[in-house]
Length: 549
Ligand SMILES: [Zn+2]
Image 1 (cartoon, rainbow, N blue to C red):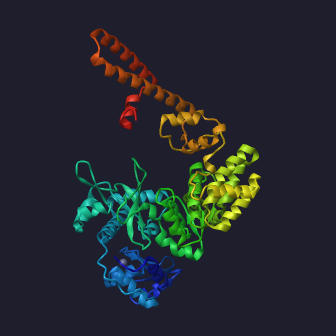
Image 2: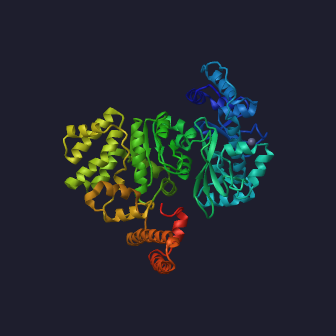
Image 3: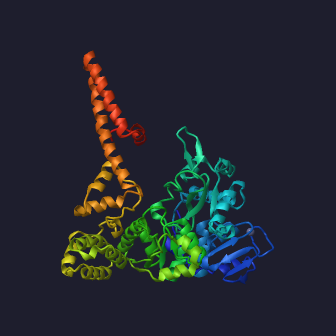
């Protein structure tokens, strides 16, 4: 394992004069904010080799070699990673403690396998015959191939060509399996994990590719698929684009958090580079800590629908626990960062970022707009919504300000609120105000886990507000409540009837022929009713696994 700590590596990378170092090997000329020269890797004579100081990377538009200052030494001079870091450190005058008696990194084969796969996927996107699908898809989203290739995007074809390619590189199946690049089917055969997907490479903070996020092109499920957890890929501890964004985060003194890979892509192509995204899940405390290392202020830029708001407020609480200053930017309804930048450009987005308000103010705005602050029970519920955020605020001054604001808005004495906050330590993980839309609307997505929950959700009234809102957070999807209600009632009734059928079956063998005949008639009657109540009951139960669970 390399004993050089990550933050030292970051420090070295940032201190390095990329243009100067590469300029010792390549004759570079300024071209806008970048530098261009003949590529030392494929021995080109035209100025197709770009050094991009703002991103701390180089890229060749012909042979597509790419990387940071360390990669340059590794690829150009054949150094290993720690040696390259030491060499650059020596030049910038940073002292790195001598190497201890450590062996090689046991995960090195995994990094190599994922890097080889990333190169191969990128080539498929660039020029593979099947990559046409992906090239067209990018085109349809208004993304130019030449601009996305330097970001390492790739394409995983549908067939087995990946297996052959990796074999020809001498990579062993066990390593590819452990790296999450292959999956073992039930019959023991191996298949590529990613098939027919546009791939976004996911880097660790050292800028090594450790996994992929894959957008399916064509019919099927799931639309997005990430690498499975491996010894080097932990999706709760990584952020998409952090390796590239962290320098910009320091410079801009802020980070922008978005939901999706395309949002990140669009913002960074528009020149807003301090942008990161979680990997398709809610923000974790590990991810919040990662952000904290590079910025003290974060702007959440999620969709403005109910699901987006829920994700916003959950994420915000994690970030508050890490003492970050958390703002929320509000997109116009129906827009996401990707579409907004397409429509209004970077300037349009900057305007929205400028209007970002503190997360607590945003919560209050929403509660007020929904009429929570107008009535006494509403105020009580509003406080229940605000308390988790107050408790999450680990910074004492922020917490103090939040309490004053909440006391004022809800018309309670601040000392009463302080006692309430103190009564249940920090870390309350409740849903945001977004989880409680007015009763006249039933928008949130996702189906409840069971018919009983649906029924309960429909039966509960405003008086049992807490339970109601928790269920509401799980939501009905955009289904028709009446149809869902009928289905749920029928499902519960169908389960009762099925239990009746089971009882008859248990009795049957022990009865006299006459009783058996009447039981069979009874069974038919129950079964007919079951089918009437729930025509697809059997199918549904089979899909769900064992009956009665
Ligand atoms: Zn080249």
